[in-house]
Length: 490
Image (cartoon, rainbow, N blue to C red):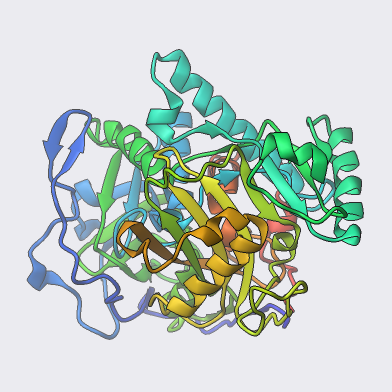
């Protein structure tokens, strides 16, 4: 499917691009937040009867908006991408930032992930390689800076040096992993191929056939999304005291306000406020970005089809699982292709059935900073549903048991009281590359979305790239592969 962008000459005379209010998470209530030791109310709290009605929103004079609702940059989306973009702008400039979200941080894909910052399943030379390496470098620098401040990165971020194992079950997969190890080593990374005998000492619970093996990167890390988000939020809120930062949670964006016939957006209309944006607007709404952009511009002269879809994923978390221990993060080789065993396969199948349109399950396993066993993972294109599907959980358990047979001693039913199921919607995009850059037709609206399962991994590199674009700084990483214009999606 080719990207469709149309810009007409009959400009909207009202200068307002609007959409019906987003009712997502409307049952949640705002609460007081602790900001740098002070309890203050988020700036977004207004009387509930001020919610906008469905239909067009008209703002005749932007100057009517309160000065407290005027910011240099307004960011829509408070997942890990939006939060880190706000952080980077606050730390690297004197700009003021507003963060807008229909719910709260960690309500979407960010809070439902495994938190791995791994390279074993990445391929050097791909268009995302440079961004991934830069982002991982920034994560490691952040963890080191926390340590230099006398804090423990494990406690603050859930930062843990697990190393990663990308495991193979067949001779063909092992040959592929040996080649990848060579490529990773040429990039200066510590990487080695481990045979099944070598793996006995590294990961005793992992059982493979003799033709199997693993690409091992001992220097890979993982983090805890909830701890990391809490740390970033706390840091961002320190800038609220000087009037440079505000959060507008439970307050969905419903319109882009464009003064006159300008291609520049001057404000964001939310369900409760009009937020002036003097420098830029950044849309980082995860899997909602495509539909949100469609709604925001549907009454405008710009037609943009952005094929970002929700890709549902389940994770199974066994809390305080004392009878089992993993030394490293583990992932099966098929994970990289987003295809593995489907519900048409059974635990006894030696070869998975591939069906990209149906459910796919790939084995991933790690222990988090709290000692919980985190198992996954599934992928489904089933719209915006976040309902738990027990058949998917059963299949994850079966698939993991093929690699870690000691788990078969445990009954999933017996573990029901100590388990947690995470369901998230990854922002899937057909060509596999996130969209990072200007929206065609606008001079100051930027997109940062489509990271699918790599949001945490690529967050800091993405944040730096967007901040550099907003500030007019040279990019540390080539941004051309991530531009929206010129992309063709299949």
